[in-house]
Every structure is written in C-alpha cells, then in structure tokens.
Amino acid sequence: MRAGLPEYSGDESLRVVLTCHKALRSFAVEAKAAVDLLEGLATTRSIRRYTDESVDLDDLRSILWHAGRAPSGSNRQPFRFLVLRDGSAAREAKSVLGTAFRAGWAAKRASDGYRASRFADSMQRYVDRFERVPVVILVCLDRYRAPNAMEGASVYPACQNLLLAARAHGYGGALTMWHLGVEAELRQLLAIPEHVGLSACITLGVPEGHHGPLRRKPLREIVFDDQWGEPAAWAEGQDDLAD
Ligand SMILES: Cc1cc2nc3c(=O)[nH]c(=O)nc-3n(C[C@H](O)[C@H](O)[C@H](O)COP(=O)(O)O)c2cc1C
Image (cartoon, rainbow, N blue to C red; front, side, top):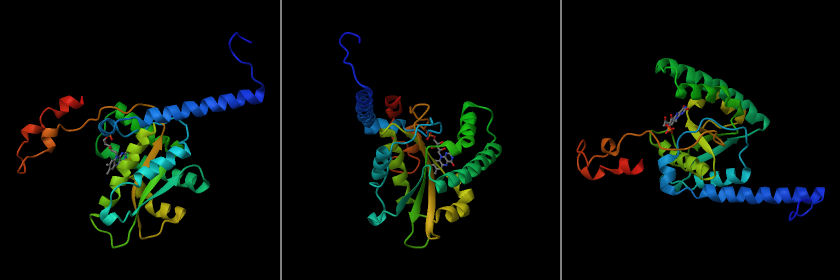
C-alpha cells in the first residue's frame, strides 16, 4: 500500500467507487444546473450529435417536469410527452423515424440546394445514426376541440422548456418535424389516438459538441418601435453585449 492511502477489500472498493461516482455525478449536476437563465437562452442551440451515453432517468424526470411547467391556453396543459428509449416499441418506432428522417433530410438537401459543408455533414450523420439517439420524445397535443391554427401555442412553449431543462442537466436536443412523414405508422405502432396531434419530435442525448453563441438576426431587424417598420433606436447595442 502506498503511504497515506487506505487499503480496501473488493466489496469496500466497489462501495467507495460507487460513492465517488454518485458524489461526482451530483456535483456535475449541480455544476450543470448552474447555467444562468439568460446564458441558457442565449446559447442553447440544436444539438444533433450525441455520445452513446444514456439519459439518466432522474434527469429525464426533471427535464419533463420542467417542460410541464410551461404556460398553455386556460392552463389546460394539453401537451403530452411520449418517450421512446429502448423498449421494443420504442426501438421499432425509432427505426420507422430513422427512415423518415433520412428521407426528410434527403428531400431538404436537394430542394434547398445544400452544398457540402460541416452543417450538411452533421445533418447527414444525425439522420444516419437516428436509431442510436438515446431518447426521442414525441410531443403530443391531447386535443379537446377541433384542430385550429393556434393550438400549437399551447404545446411549443413546453418544447422550449424541455430543451432548456435538458441543457441545464448537461444534455442537448433538437426539435424536429420529420416524424410527420410517418405519422400514420407511429399512431398504429404506439397506440396514439386519432384526436391526439403529433406536434414535434425532440431528440435528446449527451452532446458530442458544445452549446454556444447562436446565429440570429440582429435585434434591430426584428424589433419595431411604435409602428411597423420603425426602427427602435434603444434596441441597438444588445447584439454587441451578447457576443
Ligand atoms: C418549428 C421547427 C421545426 C424544426 N424542424 C427541424 C427538422 O425537421 N429537422 C431538424 O434537424 N431541425 C429542425 N428544427 C431545428 C432548426 O433547424 C434550428 O432550431 C434552427 O436551424 C436554428 O439552429 P440552432 O437551434 O442550432 O440555433 C426545427 C425547429 C423548429 C422551431
């Protein structure tokens, strides 16, 4: 034994390793949760590259709880989260979705004329490895009235809460729509009733890359003062502060 280090039996060593692992994990969670709210808003980007690590269930529970704190019309909370992890139906659904995502990206790549680039490569990698995404969440709308143009307003705030909560827990995600190409198959496979809308498909995992500054229009282009089209002089300067 080296001077100063205690000697442990096999069982004790395992216990020590597990205790250290737990302590490190809770330290890491605390550190991750310390992302400042405004910093989180300014730097949470779509993450499409994930390690093969699974999403911890305590984290997943917290992420979905925070998603569920989102506002909705009359506080009806019509959002529902159908989580696809590694059960047999989930694996089948991921495979159906993988096909749809590859077709969705192929069509977009062709129609929008994407040239070879890091972005195009990373999208291709995302769809090619879709079946390996650790957690896929179908965000659903449990309708209580006929579909209408505004109904998404009671679901998408929950999606953004979900992505920000995932960020706080050290994960990354992307909100996507390519599930729509296989909606009928998903309904059948996952027993989703007809009155339930499939509003979004969010992929989640431990990021391989990093969050960071977002590419967005400068504030002066998106804020008007008093009248449509009137620039807001007071809105100048914020973009420099954010960089
Ligand atoms: C309504 C909506 C639909 C989207 N659909 C897709 C999609 O089908 N596939 C995808 O990879 N990303 C999708 N995204 C993610 C956007 O591409 C992404 O948010 C945008 O390009 C900005 O990039 P950033 O989030 O990395 O800053 C969607 C985002 C929104 C809000």
